[in-house]
Length: 361
Image (tube, rainbow, N blue to C red; front, side, top):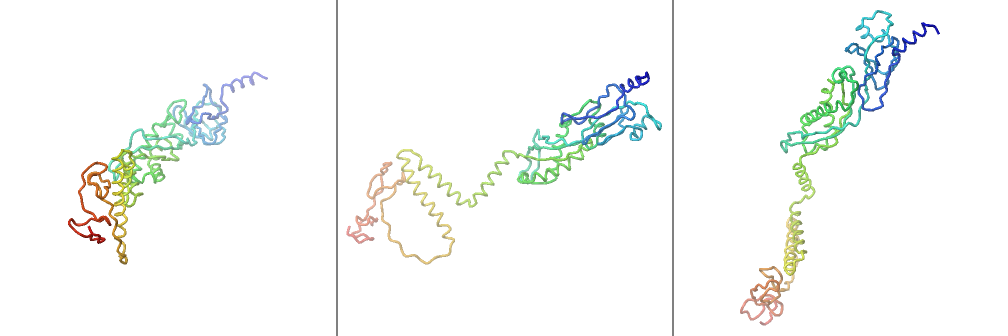
C-alpha cells in the first residue's frame, strides 16, 4: 500500500459517508444527527426510512429536505445547499452541514383533558361548567416549519415537549366546537363523534402553524356539574314513572305499610289496623277512577245490607267491639248507640222494633 493510499484512508476516516437514523424510544420527534465534528463527503449515502424526513441546515438556514428513500448526496439533489454554498458545477469536496431527522409517524393514544372546568352557555340550564377528557393522535406534517417554530437548536425533541401546548390548544378548540355546534347539555353524551369532528376542524388550523396536524380527536367523556346530573336523573325517573297520580298513591301506600310493619308495641298494632283501613280506602278510590271514566254499565242488583261489627275508636282508629264503652288500646270513652240484638244494626233511640229485621226491642 502506497503512501497516497494510506493518506486517502486517513482522509476518508475523517469524513462521513453514511447518514441514517433509527428511533428506539418511540416518543422522539426530532433528533440531530451526531456529526462528531466531521465533514460530509460529497457522494455520501443518505438513508431516510418510512415515517422519517431528513433536513439539512447550512449555517443556521434550513436547506434541503429529503423524504423516505436512499440518496447519493451531490449538487444535483441538493439544490438549496448548492445555492447557499455557491458550489460550482462538478463540486466534489467535503462540506459541513447539520442534519436533523424528523419523525413523521403518528403519535397515538395521547391523553388530553380539561385541567379546569370549561364554561358553556346552555339554552336550558344557562351557564354551566363542563369537564372533558379523551385521546388524540398527532404527527409532523411540515418538518421545516416544525424545526423553525418548535425545535430550535436542541439536540432532541420528544412528544412530551409539545404536549402542554397541544392540550391547551385542544381545550380551546373543544370550547369553540361546543359553542358552534349548539348541542344542548342533555344531548352532549349522544354527540361525542360530532363534537370530535367539530373540534378537529377548529384545532388543526392552529397547530398547523407549528408544522403539526391532529389525525384524530376522540372525546371519551364530558361530565356535567353535579346539580345538572341530579336534574337529569329526576327527569329520567319521572319519564319512567309515567302516571304521577298512581305513583303518588303507591308511595303513600308503601309509607303506610312500612309504618304498619314497624314493631312499636300496642300502638304499632293499632296504627297497623288504621293504616290497613286507610290503604284499603285509597286503593278503592284508585280503582274507582277508571271505572268512573268508563261507559255506564247495566244497573246491578242491590247488595245485601252489611253486617255491623261495631265501630272505630275516634282517638286511636282501632276497631271497637259493639257495645264496648272504652277503647281496648287507648282507653278513650266511646259514644254509645243502641243496636239491634238480632242483626246488630243501629236503631233509633226509643224504637220498639228494628227497622232492619223487625225484631222486637
